[in-house]
Amino acid sequence: MRRLLTEYIHSPERAAKIIRDGGLVAFPTETVFGIGVDATNGDAVAKLFEAKGRPSDNPLIVHLDDPAHWARAASDLPGVAEALLDAFCPGPLTVVLPKRPTISEQVTAGLTTVGIRIPDHPIAREILQLAAVPVAAPSANRSGRPSGTTWQSVSEDLDGRIDAIFKANSTTIGIESTVVDCSGSQPVLLRPGAITLEQLQKHAPQTKQLGTQDKRRMIVSGEQVNSPGILHPHYQPNAKVIMVDGLPPEISNDVLAVSAFCGIEGFDESHDFALCKIFESLESYAAGFYEFLREVDRQSVQRVFVQAAPDEGIGRALRDRQRRAAGG
Ligand code: TXA
Ligand code: MG
Image (cartoon, rainbow, N blue to C red; front, side):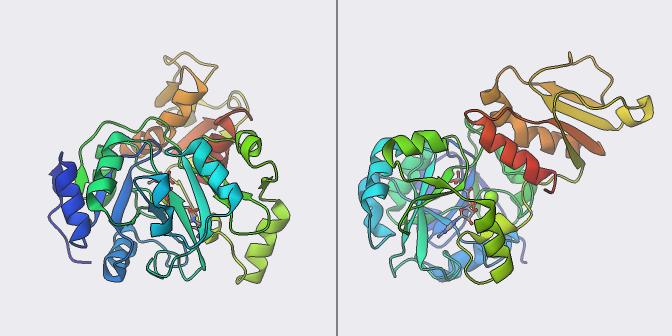
């Protein structure tokens, strides 16, 4: 693709103007950075897929400045979806609804549904408000790589490939939004995130987890795929990722010297790993996980032992990303 001169910006007005003019702008949200583009502009959306190297069968989430504006992207708001928007939005939640025709077909990869999200981040909300168009925004990383949670990481992947990068602090949650499909008879949790299944069920009691059965059906049929993104490789650094429960097995000093470790308990950081990070809490582990994987690559470390996150709170979402980073 043609190399662009990427602008580094601090102004929501500038970001909104570039989006309205059909350009691509990376900006922060509370989960991860996104690359925003006008969701009603098919040519702009096509440029975005090219910049990310994203498979065209993986739909994008449409971002709005206010839950009350759902009709800018969707054609219907079922009761359960309304309850979830009321409870959690703005916030780290995406609800999948029947699509409105004005949203470009490329955004939804030809599906009849659209994912909408109202981010809870002052810069994101201001950009969305000023742009005044629905904004499709995938995570700001080259396809398959760990998501960008700092503007520097976004720059590493996308400088020269998008029009602008908003220079802002790192994101706080660090893991992408919870995705719930509300377009069928029963809400289905498609992607775990900071908002857990139990929290969703308080407001939409019928919500069920996407079963392994469902996933298998998606892979086998190749057609009735509800969330194709689930099938593509994701979050993977160049280093080999090995998930461990607790501490890694005994390894020789030679291997230690080319290995990294991250987790929330076990070592002090003086251990002989080439790179080692112990996070203070589960929340900070989630917030710093992708950036740690990127640091591993910057330092050309060959393998990284990743302590499996506990199965509680945001740990479930983090564990899901860890499993995928490990190629499983
Ligand atoms: O937190 C987030 O959601 C971030 C920030 C930037 O908002 N965005 C993000 O986008 O993670 P992306 O493109 O990296 O992931 C979108 C996920 C994919 O798994 C995709 O398959 C799913 O959402 N998705 C989007 N539209 C869908 C739809 N109509 N039906 C089912 N799944 C959908
Ligand atoms: Mg992504």
